[in-house]
Image 1 (cartoon, rainbow, N blue to C red):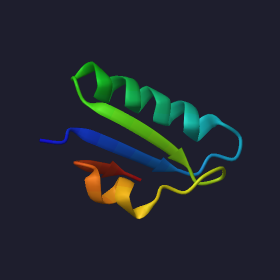
Image 2: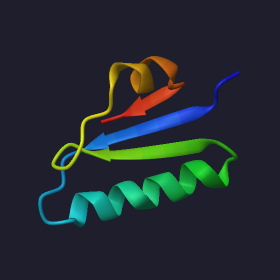
Image 3: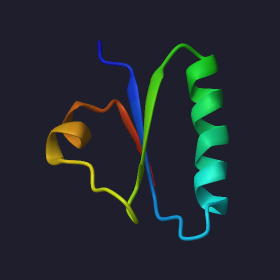
Image 4: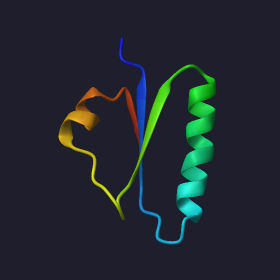
Length: 57
């Protein structure tokens, strides 16, 4: 079973990205893997979304 969570956010100044990092730390403390995509810099491809067990926007 894939236990990967993807966080998608838009952070212009870095504050939202900092919050996403805190959420990621909590997710990883529960034994799941987590990736953050800041839409300001990059877009996750469709495969990332399809393989994720959860998506946080």
